[in-house]
Image (cartoon, rainbow, N blue to C red; front, side):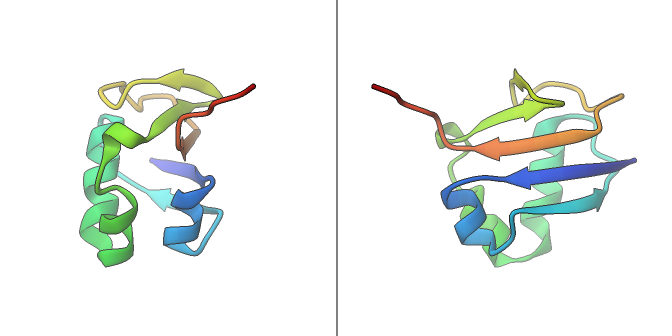
Length: 83
């Protein structure tokens, strides 16, 4: 399946790109992360601590265990705080 993968804040900075189109056989977000980490060191650095990341599937917050079936867009970003 083809996915649009978006990266925000320090994730984007570590990867050096804001988005990419990824062909994947991943069943879950965690599987997708594992595929990305296996690509090269910059992905390993960006995803070294998934506990410090949030994910959205088609603009809805999700867990890393969420399935990717039917998903078109995955976004990774740090937790937001406001005030």
